[in-house]
Image (cartoon, rainbow, N blue to C red):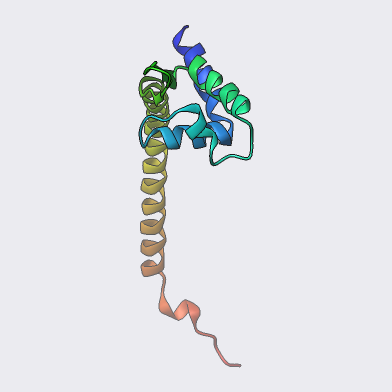
Length: 127
């Protein structure tokens, strides 16, 4: 898979709330399909389908331990997403820094204009 295809697969897998919940559970440690299915109102085969999507994206791996096939979270795809998002974070931080600078300049200009005004400009003359 190319880096772009890996990102696409990761984002597609993360788009589903059930899959995100499965990842949250796996962040606590290994679990079997039965253990992962427990909190959901769905069948074990339905959870297995979600796990297959997560596996194809590289977010989850399964191993064999006698009769048990524990699932575990894989960090590499999440690291790739974090790195990709970090580039956009830098862009927005730079934009916000420029906006902060502009606002400070505008405040300074407004303050200097206010101090340069003659106080008599604001008094009214009675006829």
